[in-house]
Structures are given as structure tokens and as C-alpha cells.
Length: 125
Image 1: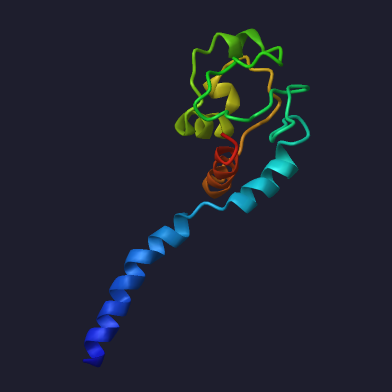
Image 2: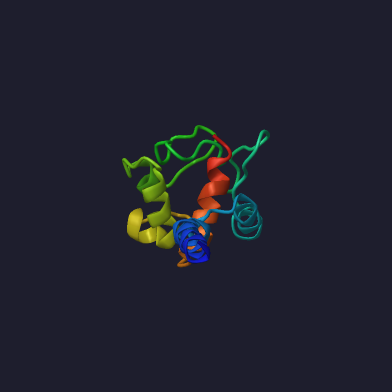
């Protein structure tokens, strides 16, 4: 009986462990946004475009489409919808996704940080 309990525990741990490793952390995303994005972008109820576009509802939005920011021609003509896949690629290498973008961000290579940041952005539909 004891061996069966250990087997069930190991099975349960094997099923849960991958979820824990890949879990997104909205609070970590918020800290990342504050430290890496907030100097240019705003998000939240009073957000508006300024030095960069506001990011409320960015997931699912067409690139270059908010009316309160003057986008580069490259971004306006990108014909890109900000899916999580496209945002992930853009956060990794902005100039590769939208050549000629005027966004001065050189990319982020940490997949976990990108996942956390996307989770935070997702919390502002």
C-alpha cells in the first residue's frame, strides 16, 4: 500500500511540475513593465499615448492603430495584429518584426520575463 501511495505522489508531482515551471506571474510582469516599459508606455485607466502608445488592450489590436500616438510609417504599414505570438517576437527583436520601427528597445531574450510581461499586459483588456 505504501508503495502505491508513493507512486501516486510521484505521478501527481510529474503532472504538476511542468505547470509550475511555465506559470506566468502577473506581479513579476508588473515589476518588469515598471522597470523596462513605463518610462515610455502607459497602461491602466488613465493611460494615454505620449512618448509611446498606451498599451491597454494591446493584445488583439492592430499595430499602429491608436489615435493618440503618431506612429512611424513602418509601424503604420506593418499590417500586423498584436497577438501574443507577434508581441513575443517583437519583444525579442523589435527591428526584426517591424523594420524601421522608431521604438528604442533592443529586445529581451528571457522567455520567462516575456511570459510574465504578456500576462501583465493581458490584465488590461
